[in-house]
Length: 497
Image (cartoon, rainbow, N blue to C red):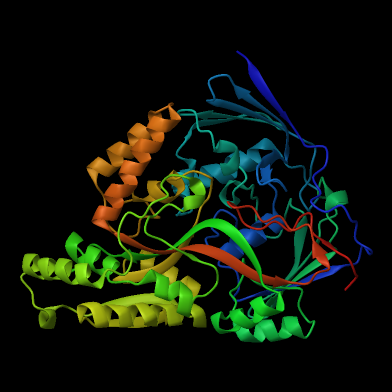
């Protein structure tokens, strides 16, 4: 058996200029408290970004946007691509206990077994067996070759976890004052602490985006906006003119999930009419002018699956015709339609987006939809228990492959599906793609799966998300990969705070 050896890169720092002081504190705004500090449970981008600060995985997405060894000092991959052997470096938790292979195996097992009720279970589906060879050797056997497996091991749900309050990442948590702030400090026991230049990271909870921008402009914050908050859409033109607006292209789609167990959303023609009636170009031009690209497919163009539109944007005339067909199949009139409820984020920008879509449906189809704005945790809980008709969500890819957007709809029972929709044909296409080694043929199968999903429309794509933020020029070295949360491990501040 031939082995491919992967070694740690010689230089990991993304910035060539060292900080002027070892006492620098990065001050960031987050719009709400993280949904969980347990990396296995975090679902919000805020939670996953903080997880990358507090924990370190076998691999990490490096400055070049690709996975590099981290806690794993050396990685052996079998010739058939189905056996990964991770050799762990000598590293420690913040309580001085050694990080060992079982820390990873146990954390993963809790997710795979369903013990935690984690929505991330499907991300472990490539694995058939995990073996702890010795305290510093972990062996993972895959069901079939998975080219993106090292990206998976860099994701937040693959991080090790023992119990709350101990960390093995670049930073440790000094305090968490609910509805106020989180304060992180450099973790002195971290194996790569010499490349962690920030002394502390202050995460101030600022629910109002306009307030956060005002604090930034006053010099009280160093970073505002994505990935742990949003910028007010109305402020973007001014921020763009001043040259202070920064953008980060990422593989993400904002979509509307439809609860297909709730009539009339069980009817595909009704769902399709809703999708056709939305004028996405008007939304990204006038409501969310943040550099978003309209989505007429599920998978972002960044992944290269399909460049052309799979349906027309804002085709009100066609939407009306499809809507009339749906009513005939449902044996209903407009007046007899049950009321529909759209739940969305309580952030001002997303509430305005929901209101614009509500108005477009009213004008094109003559239907009324009620909006209920909820904070992140409440919205997630309602979606998970099926207490919704239509729900706005943003999905960020966990790894650089179209299946990160498609696999969740393979079965209705998948914790990330949340629509109740499934199709045997769709599942078969994904199964065939998983076994296909010819990349062109695999791409064709995945394209066919996406086309089927669009034809059934249990989820309506609105736009491919771009992340916008403001940062002080003094801050450098933040890694912003297209897939994976932002990483502040290598960040530097030119001046002490």
